[in-house]
Length: 216
Image (cartoon, rainbow, N blue to C red):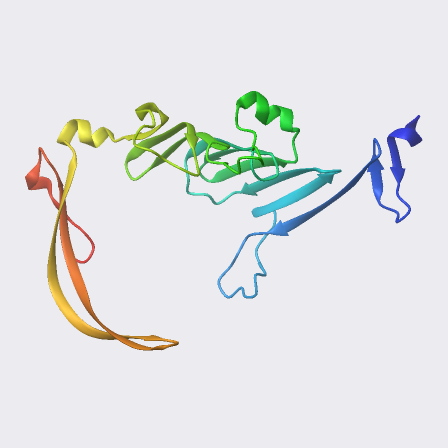
């Protein structure tokens, strides 16, 4: 019975339930001075792995020095029939991606790719919450490959608490300097004019609390 569950191929590869199984991993913990795509840090601090089970690939990824705060899920009915999920709460970030899932899952979700029409605009969707730039950003079944003015407002957006207190942010820009430059290209040198732009941003209801933008 056990021999039917676990075995070996002619090449000596492990099989489970008749499917070839193998795995490999990658170190993503880059440190200063690393070159040629080689990471000298700890794989256990930041890395990813692949577990191949026949045509299905399970890919966990981890990072324990993350600065991000989010939770997300992604569904891709175009490439490799993939579902991925991730959670990030500093300093940890964990993700799991599964490729090669049955097509019937994406047909049930209404996002299976139709090779006859070659239209995959609606076949990649995402759900998630992210916190950055002083706001809470959300995706609710958002189309990843295309957007339209007719998309429902609830599908993608942001809430910025400071806007409720001080009003929306307004940015004023002005040119503070110009300089003639030359841009070398393979076919020749192009002359151009570079501008240095300063800006100032403030909330509509609090002009006295204006903050300078970088370069102002």
